[in-house]
Image 1 (cartoon, each protein chain N blue to C red):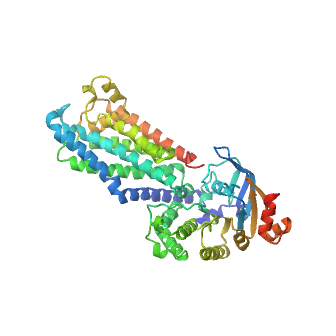
Image 2 (cartoon, rainbow over the protein chains, first blue to last red):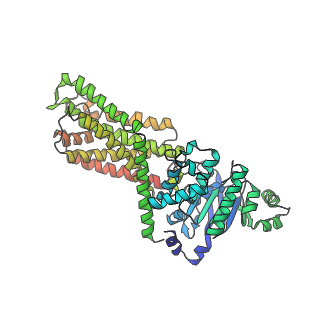
Image 3 (tube, rainbow over the protein chains, first blue to last red):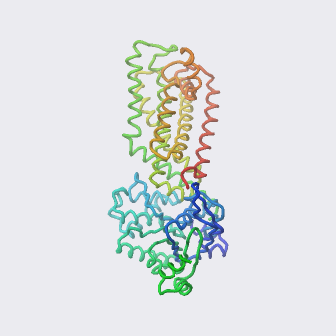
Length: 255
Length: 260
């Protein structure tokens, strides 16, 4: 199914996992969340989006995944318009910043129902769910309701759900917020594996600069709904000065 | 992906959502199916049993037989509304509606999933009421007609429930609609009486209640007695069902009050 989706793309579409053109979002209360934002994320890259609270990271993710009403401007996922073409949704997996899980389902069912919402057969969803429960160390909790899981387990389940239907683009909005150091490194290892072995494109937002430094091949700084700068971590350090990405980030946010 | 593949994916997603909604109804049967069935049975016992001895017949029908069709409509309407509004309101207020909104499902497919669960709940409750009432009420004139009327009732009130679930920001708002709109509609809809036996303004008030025509059509199907033109009632009900379902699907597609 997914291969079919990729077959339908042009060569240019295949090279660009996410393309954002002049995206502007003003919420009903007048908040300007995005201001003509432009962004390109190459296929297969591990991309970090860094910015302060309220910079527009979550709104951008919402626009790319159908969680926010489509504003002026356009977002393309592998060439498919995210606002109008449901194929964009099939190719995208999202783990939102806040952990919201269906409390009427068990941990395993959260995964299987998600897979089926995304077109997997019951059997394929069951097999994939078991695989992810194992990978995320949640097998003993398969029959437990999400509200009985610890915060770290719920976070892991949310990320597993995002990967359930084998998306080509994984969008992870602060996936390690509130997660202990051990689990954070465990998630890093898993994401690196997916990225390296399966060619998954990852868009990661985080407030942990060291996380972006450790994982991301390219990083964009976002402020007040616009991309301030973008490049490889070492390029950003060269351009903005300092010794580490954190210095470059702080410098970029002040200018 | 070819468009056929996408449609297959969406169809599977729709069945999964309908299954999830049905599963929720059945797993919470003590809250979703038992109470409305019990309420209707109590109505039947009090009005049909206790008062029925004094009234005996209404419009030539034994009183329990006269009120049963209305009780079925009342049960289907209230439960269809309660299920759709509660389930969607919970998904919205607890945030897990995101899983559906980020899926490839169209707005109308999400609406159909919620309607399916609501129809299951309302018909399961109505089936219990009918089973309990069977020994006391003699019905069965044109059951297919009654089923159509009950189906349209379920569709209209499920769709209204979906719209309310999207609209409500708090549980109070959600309950307000059920208390202020649905319950009065059910009680003045001619469930317990015949409109033409009432004095004004009650007769006009009853005839102004859209539920009255669904009760009348169901009563026509189960007993043969009716006060209004049944086919006109059903056609109007079908138009209203199509309009409310389209409104629910359209509002979901727009993300009205569920997407910022």
